[in-house]
Length: 176
Image (cartoon, rainbow, N blue to C red):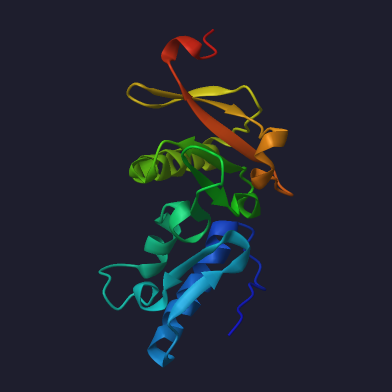
């Protein structure tokens, strides 16, 4: 079954949460997974049903980290590139940029997931916009600089805004 949002809510997260709620409801009728092809993500329908949740399932759906359901968090190993690319897909559908970062191995995945989730929360709450060259503190002693992908990183090409996050030392930040 393909679901589309045709309501009047302008907030894209509320729109997605509404669709996720319907997908979860359909679990009682045999739905197995809720997926969004454009954001490269899927989620078990039963987990969205609310059957195992205390409280308001809709509030829970709206409060999920974006990269769990509303954006795709993809790990990609590229031939002749040392390390693992961690990339977010679909954030432009929420008015946010996609992001990517090259890490040494898969062991950094959860940390990067958390950082990207926190950055997206900050962008949504503040209305701030990124430009290439921005730096920011993303942890107690963790800093990153944003850049655009290079021609050699053709595998990161996107029809939408995408920033590559590189982790830097505090001394390399744009301090005023």
